[in-house]
Length: 71
Image 1: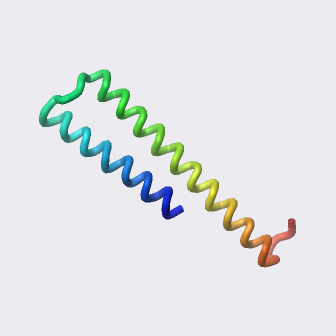
Image 2: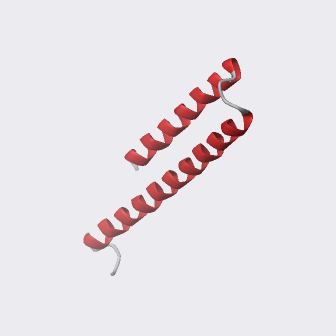
């Protein structure tokens, strides 16, 4: 989960940086900015989802190995 959180935070910080540059300097066209926004949002959701599923898998495997739940 730690890696997923770091990746999600990195995506968010990068998007905020791009959004501030767009706000102040208008470097990108509106169409390109929205494409970047949608891409960043999709990547954020996918990475977060994979990280949560992976954490649940690891926790369930550990509980099975420790004998708390049956296989």
